Image (cartoon, rainbow, N blue to C red):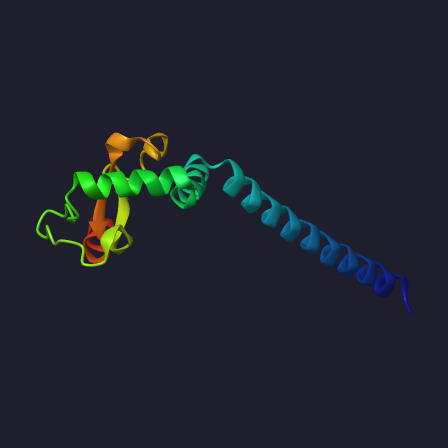
Length: 122
C-alpha cells in the first residue's frame, strides 16, 4: 500500500470520526434547546400541572364557572361528558407567551374542535 493510500485511508477514518462527533453535538444541542427553551419548559410545566391534583381541581372549577360549556366564539356547546370532554386552552398562545402558561386569567375551556380550530388560526 502506497503512502498516498495510507494517508487517504487515515483521512477517511478521521472524517468518519468527525461526522460522528458532529452528529453527537447536534443531538446534544437539540436536547439542551428542549431543556432550556422557554416555550418547551412552559409546555412541560403546563402538561405536568394539568395532570396534578391542583390542575384537575382548577379544571373542575373552571368547568363550573363556565357552566359546563365550551367558550368557543361560535360554539357554546354544553359538555355531554363533564369536564373531561373540554380541554384547557391558553387564551394568549403558549408559543408566544410562555410566561402565561399557568396564569389562571389566561386559561379557558374549549371543546376539542374549537381548540383545534383556534390553534390552526394562530
